[in-house]
Amino acid sequence: MNLYNKYLLPKLIDWTCKQKPNRLQRQKIVPLAHGNVLEIGVGSGLNLPFYDNEKVKHLIAIDPSLEVWKQNNNDPKILGLQFDFLRAYADNLPIENNAIDTVVTTYTMCSIKNLEQTFIELRRVLKPSGKLLFCEHGKAPDKNIQKWQNRINPLWRRLGGGCNLNRDIPDIINKNGFIIPDLHTMYIPGWKPASFNFWGTAYLK
Image 1 (cartoon, one colour):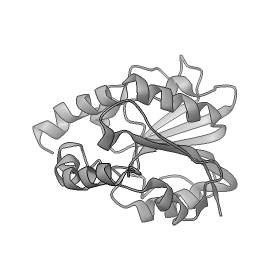
Image 2 (cartoon, rainbow, N blue to C red):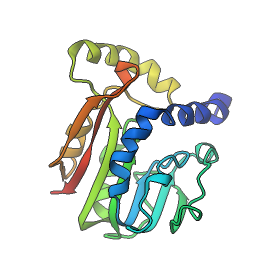
Image 3 (cartoon, helix red, strand yellow):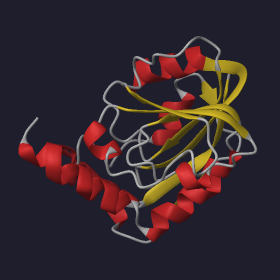
Image 4 (cartoon, one colour):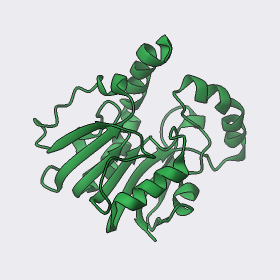
């Protein structure tokens, strides 16, 4: 790991994800989590204040980066959450089968390398009645913006910790064993190649 990835990148990711438009998006889905909850890519814990501690029985949060997690300023105990942080990758979850009621991902699928294996893992750990709450950025509907996303993406991915601008998130979810009955989309304020958002609830097929 070079100095940029270890010291500067975690601060840049934390600063970017703290911006008001992103925070408002998180507030739309995180409070819907209930039961045993798994958050994929907890980062610096920006979702923690939005969990409803009366609905969440146990929150397991995973992230491969301790450097990003160290930016966390939210104490789960103060927030009334039964909480465990695990340093782990989404494509190899240290969690039992059919143990999770809700999976939460916010601005995470853009940077997961092995999405197909990750969804195999999500299907494994979710209960049959479980759900996936997601809020992600990705492929814009406008052809001109798509062109810029595709042009910039190779450099963006290298500088942004593996983040991809041009992933079609709903298509990925649908092709990996889930259905999305309530998909929402819009551009949030910000740089257009990185600001088209998808959010909603997905269920196992």
